[in-house]
Amino acid sequence: MKKIYFLLVLLIGLTKAYAQPCDAQFTTASAGPNALFFVSVSAPDSLLSHYWNFGDGTSSTLANPPHTFANCGTYTVYHATQTINPNGVVVCQDSAWQTITIACNTPCSAQAFFSSSNVNNQPNVIEFINGSTIGAGQVVCNWSFGDGSSITTQNLSNQTHVYNASGLYNVCLVVVSGVLGTTNVCRDTFCINVQVQVPNPTPCNLTANFVSTVAPSGNVVAFTNTSVNFSPGDSIIWNFGDGSMGYDVNPVHTYTASGTYTVCLRLVRNITGAPPCASEVCHTVVINNSVPCNLLPNYTIQTLPNQPNTVVFTNTTAPNSAGAVVTWDFGDSTTATGNIVSHTFTQPGVYTVCMHVQTSNTCFADSCGTVVINAPNPNPCNLVPTFNVNPAPDQTNVFAFVNTTITANAPQVNWSFGDSTFGTGNQITHVYAQPGVYTVCMQVMVSSSCVSDTCITITVNGTPPPPPCNLSAYFNWQISPNAPNTAYFVNSSFGFAPGDSITWNFGDGTISHDANPTHVFATSGVKNVCLRVAKVPFMPGLPPCVSEICRMVNIAPVLLTYPNPATNVVNVNIILDSATTVYGFVYNAQNVLVSQTIVSGVLGSNTITFNTDNLLPGYYTIRLYYNGQYNVARFLKL
Image 1: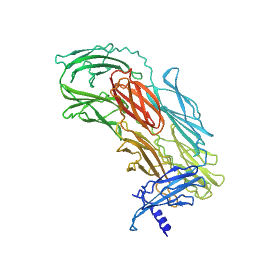
Image 2: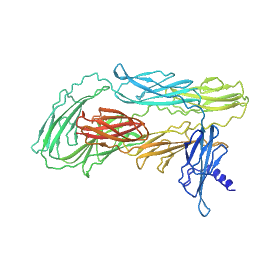
Image 3: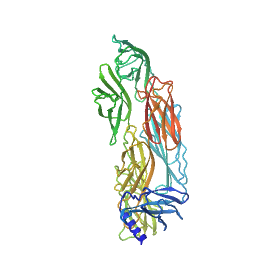
């Protein structure tokens, strides 16, 4: 009788979502060939009981049972939970299910790989050598060069690409092999970052120089720019040696403390499509001043999730800067005033944003940082292919197929009818010569870089089998470089369609049902984030179509540099959740790349070291790229 009651609880729980505190959701882990561990997400509780049905005629009442499947195949695993208090009252009930596939086939043999090299010593002409391997069948290679251009080939050929602008580009190769147009295909992706430097056709003839005059007051200095070949429109920046910066041609600067300061002038002539022409010179000035000014300028930046080109800047200068005049230079020829300002950048790029805080005529300071505005994808490929099958009312071997895919442009539609015949067009009728079960596939092509396909099974002269569950949960994420502990998540599940159920569990007690959520974690560290997708509505009499995946997401804390200020070397620590390549770049205050390194990172703590012997005094920014993440740290070189 108890078992019958428990099965009734299981049937009732199928319609429930995440009951607490007896949550029936569960994860799996490999326990050997054809064997899995099933792990309940509910906390251990002596009052909580479990019932598992493994879909192969066996069951268990353990909280976290191991199970070995006798045969390969697809199984629907059900899990029911309930809590009954000492008085015999049911406190809570829940149930959940997952579709588990025990595979016996050979793993996908496609492996994408390529390397890069300059062509004829041209730093902006890169040859990508295709080193991919595939198994039997056809092959398609999709190249994405990181500058908005791409190409598709049906062989493992090498590719040569010419870049028109200097920068760091993320180049990716997707290899698809097998029987194209069916579900029997293998896919693999490989990406690397390529640093490109476009040659400068114009020689650099800038020579920076200046003279200084100290006023009778002893703390005010007038600087006169005497640079050779300097012209209006050239970039100019002064580092007065006391943590503040200036951008006038001939500035006047007030020092707040006595001492000897190293003042540096840097000039940059920017030519479109070529590396900047720069020159820098430093001299010392002696100041005799007893008036203290202890401002420590600083500010924070926050990018709005739905407006990636709009940034909110907040003055956090210490000590209390109440009543101070705060002015901003956003690096795009626009300025603003106020302690909290919002600015919208009209073009993608890397901008040096500077804040000037002034509490009196003799007490002021500056702080500069870098803001990266990414270009939106102008041509996203968001194809979700679907089609209808309409059998003829009076002919059991005649079927009409209709493309119902929603696309922005008129696509090319290719059909494979499963009987070694093919067709094209949005609507097509096909006559089958023999009865049987056939797999019909439709491929929708909007462009060479935007192709998607889907397949279903039909029965000729018989009752069609139930549609397969083709959901496969997957997601990607990106850590915000500006907002602490903030991550952007993107649902990239295979077979997911608008209207399907979606649930995110961020591993910190919070969930979301948004398609592509932004989440702020309370603390940094490695988080177990899970995505669960399900077909809605469920078909009567059939098991539900559900897929779930969990991935470890590293929410990195704010990176710190040491020693800071630096003299000979500077270090920055990162913690990796897996061994991977770390690309490190150092930029000066004008956003010019001055140093770089590539490190083979290991699991756990890693120290990335940069040599600063050859760097001029001033402020610098470190950018680290690894596993699709982007982190920033800053330091001062003395």
